[in-house]
Image (cartoon, rainbow, N blue to C red; front, top):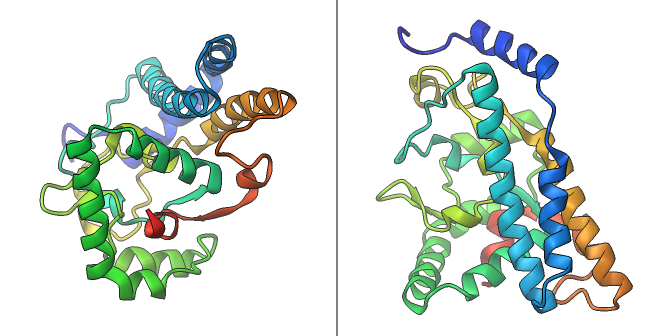
Length: 240
């Protein structure tokens, strides 16, 4: 594995990161504060906050990587992680759908056609895993082993069709060692997750929603209920 970090080196760098790096929480809340003061409609504020906070997560990960000199080996066209079950809440599902509805006509139609084809092709597997408990590692393993692709994945190009609004789990799962570990293992132990950034991401969105709730207008989001309704992305997108 010459040229790649070993698993032991990755663990060491993660410990170093934990000791020396402090998450920039202000970057997340600054986004919300600016949107609260903007003249955008409620739904525009929600969609824009969703997109900007997802970007903030990616930027924070980049800064952490730079702090301990780690470079991801994930590359365009590498889609092994796009076969994991992705869980999001109903608010996120609504904002993904709303974001797609605002895309240029040609791209929106491309996604709609893709979704139609996806559910025709994979309906049996989608139904099989509809009630998956992702906390059960054996069931999660079976899901990954089934090779059911993400509903957003173009399996011909191995590219995400909605990359800029891909959910937080997709952004926080990273490989820093030989990419072969993803090809050779259903659930490789060498990969790491930055899912702890969910706290800053969701905390900032919640602050915006609390403000909107006080204004008696939370738009397309039913607050707080939507935040507590979680399901697989493949289930949320069925009715798009």
